[in-house]
Image (cartoon, helix red, strand yellow):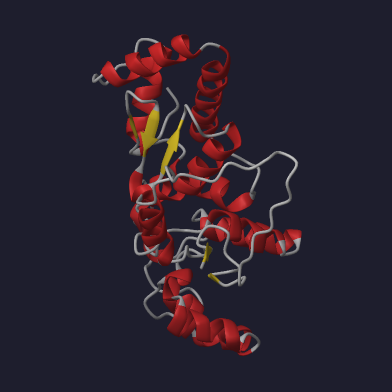
Length: 272
Ligand SMILES: [Zn+2]
């Protein structure tokens, strides 16, 4: 079993660093799901027997591949069903029978921040769902030395005096620069000796003060609040229409007005 507790802060670093770097737990789960999906294509009976075994397991100590899959899914807040469908938090869902490996992996990557955020006890998290791909894209746009500073900030590498006091009783909880009570918002927004730095970045300070106060604690892009509603809406659509029979060689032209909500956000984009 992959440890969930030990790499809690590492979860965040993995999340922030790259669109390609995967958390070990997510990597293992995706490998299992891809294997079952491929087995579904070449030997469906065998694949469905694994699904049935996983569905029947209700313990906490797995003893084989199917029970391990069930346990991993439980950790992430997902359920597996006898029809080989998987349902997750916030209306995420896939089918090991019908969906492609790429789609299954994409959905699990999108759902991963939900697990991440419920396993973090950090100020600045909990009121929003982080946007994985957008965070990684913005992060990659910074030069390497600034990326290093951002990562240290995200994983708690810069400790204020009050945090250091928790493991070193001799550390005073006052700011070493000005002597006032120390906190992350004090350092970012209030500390007088750092005013010259703030004056160079008025737009960033305005965002921290009014639009994204949680970025004082942890700078992650937010998912659109529309995304959850849209996923719930899409689940209600049935694809069992009587579609017209079309000849293979015939040309089909589809028209759309091109309108969409959240057009720049692939996870929340919905064409009208
Ligand atoms: Zn200060």
